[in-house]
Each structure stands twice: as C-alpha cells, then as structure tokens.
Length: 396
Image (cartoon, rainbow, N blue to C red; front, side):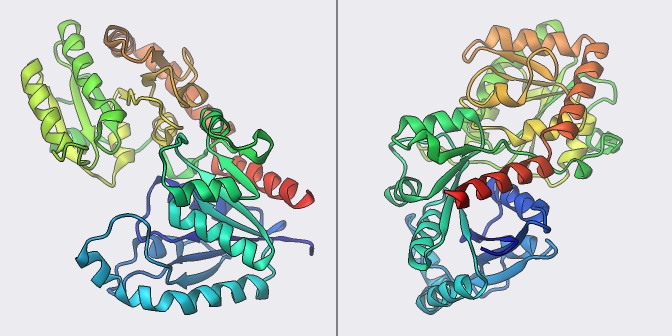
C-alpha cells in the first residue's frame, strides 16, 4: 500500500437522502493528505434527472464515476423498469468497467451504505478485486431486513454504525462486535447559522411574531412521533394557550396505504388543536424553520441517531425528544434538551411546557447544543473517525 489510502464510495440510488448526506460529508472531509476519494454514483435514467449525481458533483478533489448499476432489489412497477431499461442493459459492461476502475486506481477500501444494492455491490466488488469492504449501517438492524442487505453486512470486512444503539442491534443479530466500528454522525456547522432570519416563515403561515412555536422536521410516518407530539400539544395548550406547531416534512404512505398527513390532520381536529398546527410539506429552508421556532421536538421511537437534532442544536434550539434509541447519544438531557420516556405523553408535554416558559433555559440549552456540534458532532470529526477505522481495517 502506498502513502495514501484510496477509498471508493458506492451510491447506487438516484435520490439523495440522509444516508447520502452523511457519505457526502465523509467524501468532502476525509483528509486529502491521507486519502484519495472516489465515488461510483448512479448515472440516472437517461432523462437528465440525477439528484444524487448532481449533488455529489459539488464535492471537490474527488474521482467521480457515473455508473449504471444493476436494477434494485425492491419491487418495481412496469413503468419503473421501462424507465431504467437503458441503465439495466448497460450494467453488465459497467460492472466490469467498475472492477477495472478499482484495479487501475489502486482502491484499498470500497464503502457502501446498508441499502441492499449498495451492500451487495460493495462486498461483491471487493471480493472480486481483492480489496476491503465496508457496509455503513444507518438504521436499527433487524432479522427482518432484506436478504441482500443482510448478506452484505454479514460478509463485509467491516461494518460502520452511526450510534452505539445501532451497533447493539447489529451485534444482537449475529455480527461479531470486533467487526463493527461506531462512527457517530456529524454535520457541517458552517451551513447552520443561528443568525438566519426566520420571521418570514411566521408571516407565510400567519403565525403571530411572538407566539410560542414548536417545530418538528422529518418524514411524516408513525415512528417519527408526530402523533404523540399532537397529543402532547393538546395538553401543552391548556397551560400555554397561544402555542403553535409547525410540522415539516414529506408525507409517507403507511402500511395500510393511507396518507399519514391526513391521519394527523384528522387527529388535530379531534384533539381541538387544528387551528394551531401548520403542515408545511417538504421544505428546503430548514435553517429558517429552526431559526423561527422556540423549541424543536421529534419524539421518534428508537431513533437510530437523529441528524435533525444536530441541525436544531447547531441553530441554538433546545430539543425535546425521547430517552430511547440513539437519541440520548445526541441530545444531552438537561444540557441541550429534555428527554422523556417513550409512551409518556404527560412527561413529553411537561418538557415542552418547561422550555416554552423559560427563555433563559432555552438560551442556555441552545448555546450548549451549538457548542457541542462545533466541538464534537461535526463532519470533520466524523471523517477522522472513519479514516482511523479504515486504517485499522487495512492493518489487519
């Protein structure tokens, strides 16, 4: 091995999600004195619509190889298959070309996510070319996950985990503890400026300038806790009559096939709080949302990590969440926010009431949270930890 470690990341999805953002931070912040960074990214479906590829192009000093991957493992409609036909017929040649790329560039480590196709490609390509593989797990691991994803985690040379909680689930499902490296997530603090003016958000949704405001940002589905937050809001309103709640995020279709947003709207009406709840849908101005709220809350169940907690902390906002999953590793109870037991709506409401009623406490927790992001939960530290794990993997 030469002076530098050569790492190839794989991203076979067309979209750009939270796991993509973490990998983008790793690619951007890995020390170029120690590493060369490469990415094989989904080339898109030929329509020019390639969100992930376009985002990754922004990362400097990186070898980028647009790639046609094999069709994914999830169920696909006829329309989806037809749209991806161009990539599907190209993938055998592109796979062979990707193996040649690994050899030509002297790649030492191939790093994929826990998405089934990424995991299979990372491990399979590494075995084919004689290099090391890493599968990065971003969710609580379980026996019920797809066979290809489990095969990747089981056969990778190393597994990266985003929290100690997630590490525990990986080990509990049969992976040796010594193969798992806990690399706590981080964000780029420079993209989160507490001085951002969020007043326009309140004007857009006719929320009074001085009204106490909660915000919750995530995809809308049951495990993110919006239902429990709505119940808590009804109790908070008894003590804080002028409270408002912003629910930000794209709708998710629940298992029963209905819209979770519509379910939440019905619940708000039943609880008598519909006039104080605003559903914004998906938005790109999350910094302004954070800037205008007083308290951020996402009482999600067994949250693997919670990047949005770091975003709220970076914007100097206190967090109200649950004392389970990976959340306590991110939100320091009593210092950057308040945590309550899962299922305890009274405790959740009490924490919100406490923070809404004490501006000094909010300021103190907000300041501590931002300091914690600047000092530890930053992408540079995350990249250093990942780099150290690559080095340890290659020494064994």
